[in-house]
Image 1 (cartoon, rainbow, N blue to C red):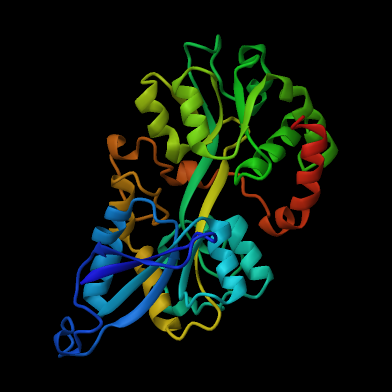
Image 2 (cartoon, rainbow, N blue to C red):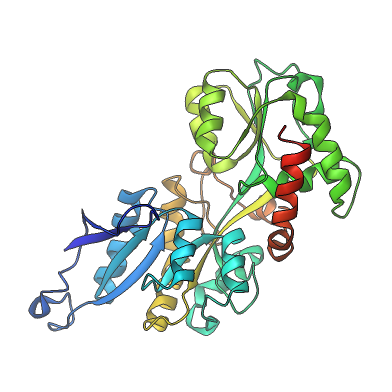
Length: 357
């Protein structure tokens, strides 16, 4: 079978790109896989499109074969794909989104309430991932962390804390995420903590970040910008998601990643069933598949996604660059995404006035 991919780019007409897959064609009703000639059921999945070969071979392909399914993928970034759901211009059954965007979908009534009894593998994942946006909605299938990476040859001290970003060692060689980036609100919360607050204080956070802004080479919106600046030694470091540390390490072999003493931040990608799906039970079965020990272990060992299934066991080499283990995951700081979405516009306006000048 040839797997069909549909571009999620809003500025491009919807097209289908053929990629190698497995199973049999939806047109080949006489040759259905393992079901006595029954044609496969089409399941439309909306996702980012990264690590295509891995997902085709280890996640989508085996699920197609075992369940007589023809998976069709809609590909694009979070905002593009969520907008298509809003506009009703796609027939998506399952959608992968960061928790920030998934909360928007929940607030707008775009997702079905899931039946957790149909997703038993939820019971095997970390508590933080089981219901990050409420019991009615999908789990996080991966939890990463936002910490600090730095080049020790350019920073004249060991970095252990969020407060170290305000140290003279980072003078004129720092990057931090823009407020509109996924990690932006996390850094805002970290600034509030550095200012001495146990609960979030917006004024204190902005005041603290304004102190830092003069040392920022660039407020990055894409991780590729961070990697390029780090590789060229235009920056010494800054906050970054651990999943991208391998790219920094490839460019600067002695680079270090730190889980700050005040706690790193949970970066969660969720998986939900779209409102009106005609394949809700099959979609829930796919979610259960994504959470399985086998799929989670393969994803972790391939450095594609950090595992949330507690039964996954990794050796030291396999765990490098992966957010792994209860001692790490259960200590992560988790933002209230409903609150973040409510404040996002005001924070962006204030950021543009006070920080990004």
